[in-house]
Length: 530
Image (cartoon, rainbow, N blue to C red; front, side, top):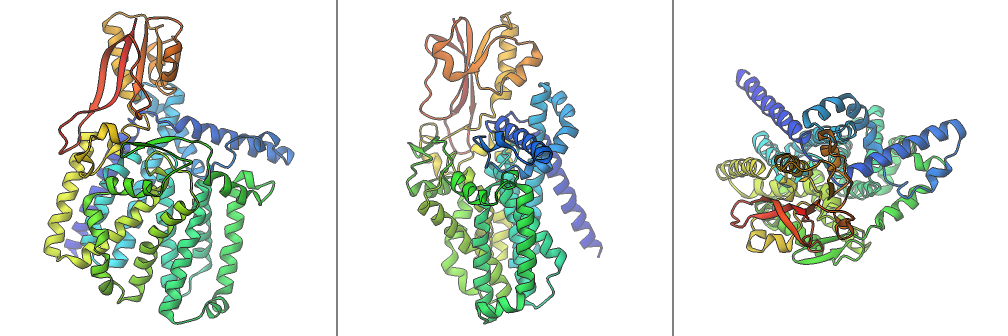
């Protein structure tokens, strides 16, 4: 008993340390490219809610370009943001508005940390091994690509987290049905709420019903019953779920209030989101509205840890061992079949995807679960423990070395290439906080007037205004049309389209270096143009 209590205390303490360190890193990370837009969407939706309550309609909202952009996560984040925004603004020395935006990072990271609990519960159900599940969950939570995104990504990380939570709740229901236990009205209502919430973060969450259907097919096959028999026995549960789900979905999406048919319009609009962004992919600039099918597999190949890629390929060697247990089959089969199904649907429907695989981050935990399961059933425990422990140590080292650019992490296969010329680096622009410090120091050391114009991004001003910078602050794309000199230009190295400013002196080059890769990689640069 004492050993068990000590183990739980150690695990809880380590998890708390993880939350504290990750939370601090999140609220000291730069302001990223989506955060202004996310805040604007919330304010527009909030205004529409007020207008609808008072007048019964919201005509201006119906004309808003991004009206289908789900804002459910804001219901959680906004109250917390307002509670901690002053503290966050003070420790970062940013404007009040900058503090409000950065405050969301804390909620995003905390949501990701919670997803780790459900990752563990699912893997434990499959492997029935607590130690392997804990080590695997640690790798998931420390994986630099996701850990980095969890410091700021206001859309994809919450969506990933709630997809995992919804997955666990659905599988738990099928497990209860298999064991012929009472599901319970409260469980069904909770399940319907979380499912509706998922879809209200991003409407692509409707794909979760395909995952539910996969679970159902496996359940029917294992129970040896027909679909009709299932409906006849569970029609009350289905009606409770269907009714409450629809109510929650409408409530959580203000755009649906005037006409529920908007659900279909939302799916259509977001599937072909009209923003044709180019993503540097293995040396080619590929645009979101015209992606080749190999786009997904290129990024999965270079972004997933090599251990996970190897584990995933072990499936043919272990599937006979895994599918002996019916409950394990429901859990593992659902997750393993869902991943390729979703990827194929994205390819067939030619869904608009950009910025690597940010719109498919939600399948990464599923891939990890499949891979760790395969590794568990293939290798002996004497090999697995040191192997997973080494990966944990490596990931901790990578996160320390790359901070705050962990999300740009690439596996060692990418290091055989010229990374800077073949892949995106800091496409979210989190470098603006570090760069603002360099600009402040350079201007003060060289006694330059703080009224100097600065061409950077729209977020850097939140870091400069508290230091009395009051000149024009425009986008880097406006450099060629600059009206007065001298000015400072901050170039973020998103992809090959951006060239250096003409007739300017390099002040600073922000770089990072990946493990096992000799060349320093440029993240951004600052120039003085006279």
